[in-house]
Amino acid sequence: MVKLIGKSKISCAVFISGRGTNLKSILKFSKKNTSKINIKLVISNRRNAHGLVFAKKNKINFKTISYKNIKKAEIQILKHLKKNKIKFIFLAGFMKILSKNFIKKFKNKIINIHPSLLPKYKGLNTYKRAINNREKFSGCTVHFVSEKLDSGKIILQKKVRIFKFDTAESLANRILLQENKLYPKAINKVLSKI
Image 1 (tube, helix red, strand yellow):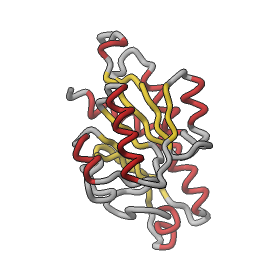
Image 2 (cartoon, rainbow, N blue to C red):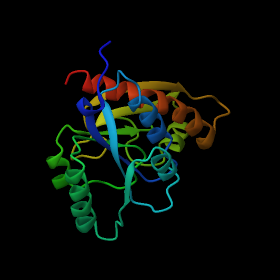
Image 3 (cartoon, rainbow, N blue to C red):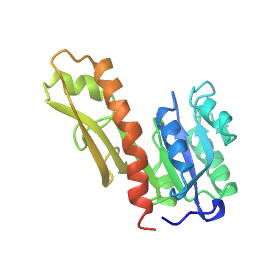
């Protein structure tokens, strides 16, 4: 394997809203010599998002952006992305919907992880909906972000069995473990073609 020097890595940003477990796994992956990514920026719409702890620990530039006005928020975000020369964006539990205009500016350069086997269960409450519909499996999907919610081209998926005793919480915990493994693999798959 060829070792990549820091400068030759692709500058990326991670957008979060909460715990940041996927951010943590992406950061860990980015530090490998074989990884093509360098996380230069973390964006959060919540000041108290626990995931910001990982940004601080890893000395990564982070910004919290108020979403009271979406247009203003996106102007601010785009300014920070430009300043940090960001080429790819990874949404990792970012609970805001990006505008069509924003997505166009980063066409095929925004990746998201969703806690269901898309195209099933787009949107929220995916675990509860899968259990209520007596599905045998749920899982997670890494996909490109398109202008339609949770409808972009699928990169990778991982199935997770639903057990009779499962609650939305127990299923969520098991799916999250798979998300943390799947996201770096999907990033690697996309960037290996670059």
